[in-house]
Image (cartoon, rainbow, N blue to C red; front, side, top):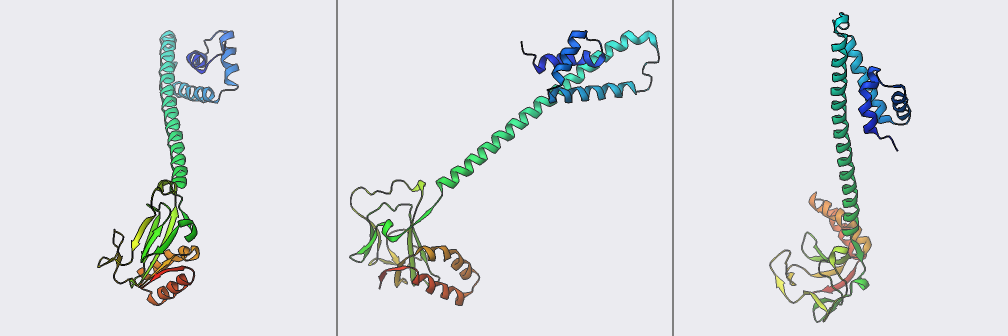
Length: 244
């Protein structure tokens, strides 16, 4: 039969007080050789006992030895109960932290997988221009991205792929993305129309895509000359889809 920590810890107060039988004492000591938790408990109980010995009046009257032994046993038992409670709380906290860390790592991994957007080339996107409109042979719902330069004259469009976007295959007729004949006063229309200011539409190349956030920062900082230069670079790295 395997001797558990609970059995040893039940014997611990008597072991500390030196009133165990020889066999029980050997059993406790054999267990302590390999159990760090019980070793720690023993150290705490021995330290508590030492504090009691150093208290004023300890051991002054031999007539109270029997009562002192009973009080000592009661004190050791109380100390054991307190230590066990602390250990249980520590186990619960450790388990809770482990669960939180596991969930955090899992969530981070899921986010990395689920929201891992990948740039799609013009060919992969299935986009093409026909009858003054921009179409695609692929399902680009949640995949198409449209950005306008600050002056509103140039539109950059591109597509990304990500697990959250759903199936890429399109059932039925090709999808209309923009109707270049439909003009609107809106700066960023939600429908398939385009702003009146737009004069040209580019499919953003991958190199241009990597520069796009730098362009936004330049525009926010009011560095117009640098922003215009970067737009020219992005145009060269992109493919013209439509011009007015």
